[in-house]
Amino acid sequence: MQPLDRGAQRSYAAVFAAALLAPDRATPSNVGVRAGKIATCRYDVYRNNVTVSLIDALAAIYPAVQRLVGVDFFRAMARFHVRTTPPSSPLLFEYGREFPTFIESYEYARPIPWLADVARIERAWLDAYHAADAAPLPAVALATIAGDRLGELIFTSHPATRIVRSQFAAVTIFAANRGSESVAEIDAGAAEDALITRPDNDVIVRRLPPGGADFLEALRSGLSLATAAAAALDAAPSFDIAANIAGLIEAGAFTAITLGERP
Amino acid sequence: MHAKHPSTASASGRFRFPALSPGGLAGTSFKHEHLPAILAAGPQRAFFEVHAENYMGAGGPPHRALEAIRRDHPLSLHGVCMSIGGPQPLDAAHLARFADLVERYEPSLVSEHLAWSTHETTYFNDLLPLPYTAATLLHVCDHIDQVQHAIRRPILLENPSTYVAFTESTMSETDFIRLVAARTGCGLLLDINNVFVSATNHGFSARDYLADFPLSRVGEIHLAGHTEQTDDEGGPLLIDSHDGPVADAVWELFARIIGRCGPIPTLIEWDSRVPEWPILKAEAAAAQQILDRNAIRRSADHAAA
Image (cartoon, rainbow over all chains, first blue to last red; front, side, top):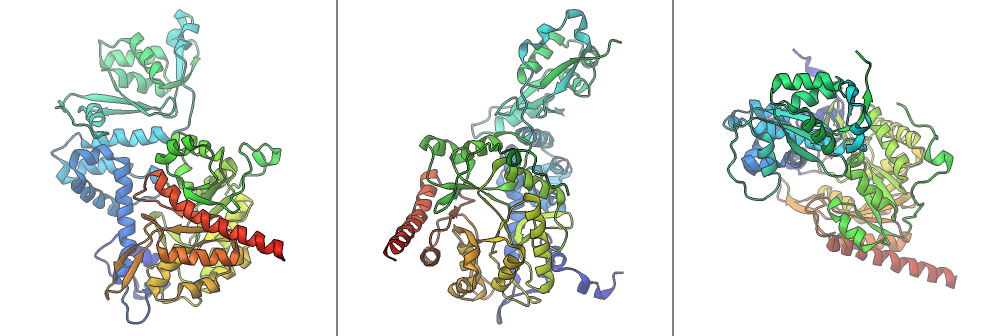
């Protein structure tokens, strides 16, 4: 039990904040307006500003998710999330990191099992957009390395590089729904992994081939090219090392290479 | 908190951007969708204002856009979530990010709000009101001292628009603001639309408020659009929505203030339902005309004296 007079000790901000995201709570006792006026509708302006602006923030981060489910569905889903998980940083471009997991648990989104992975790609897209700028590794960089030492190479990931893995066609669905063009039929059940990065001004999202995500994850964690290639071949025996490393460099996934210690 | 020491740009005398003055100028909020139109038109006789938080990412297109604008124009850096009006300590990491932006972009004007937006760890993304008491005065002054220490220059503090008042307030908003400015040395950002919105919502006279306001400390003016709703009793309830043109009544108050004070850098704020660039530019041109008319009149008065 809380002591009954605890409210008297709370700051104006604590009293005012308590009902902002709780529509069933009464208007705070410490606010008023001039004689003959009640404060309900006026306090509701703040409630509305908070909730609507945060739903708008999620809609700005997750436009493909909104297009997939429609505005009304999206805003109802986002309202639940905003009320239970408001931002903990004043930087709104950091908001919504828990939204994909929330979508997975949201009852009404269950018939759309790929929705959370599309959201993960959108969240990674925004991270890449705001990531530090860095010049990508030039395509000719590998030519300077002696062939017998290629396997020892360690790759430095670009600050914008992200990977999203999906059991669904999340990359194709994402790409088809970020704009306003009509969408052709997609086989949602085809698993797709995404590479997201930003070599210069524009964020790119690409589908990785089978084994490609294992390969890039290994390289990003600082493992040598030889070890990463073994991990990729483990995951997909058809994995083409030369084509994949060239493709990742060309996409701008890395900024530097260094020769590791000889084993 | 790690306030940066004068090590890089200013100490070495290496300014990366030209020192441009917003004196006598009208400006607009800078919206990225307007960048191509602004660059195509070439350097304008105007300043631009940005919300500091939108440029607190590490890199990417926002910084490139702001660099492109800043090269040819004076900049106003407007913070919207320092939570200066809250009872809890300022967020040291946020303050450090703010100081970094001031150093990086060398803005002519730096401002924040008399409001709060974070409580405990929750960020509410709105400018929330505070009571005006001796205790809150101490907090606000302490917070402004910290900000000004971190950025090594005074800020302009903006008067709020409010929908409710606090029963515990013991002084008027204008008295509170006057005391804050006197104690901290900060300047003021006078938002005339906020005055009009609050005056309507609380039933006081906007002209009386402006007569009480310490106008000599005003370094920038904001003008914006508002929308009208009704309160519980069916009376007018104005919302500071920044989503349309400036109201006629606000233009009238603005002309009176400029007639009395002379030209003050004036910003048209337009943050949602943002129009095409020519419409926003025309709104700023209307403000510029009022500023110029008074600049000419002042110099004529001066010559005659």
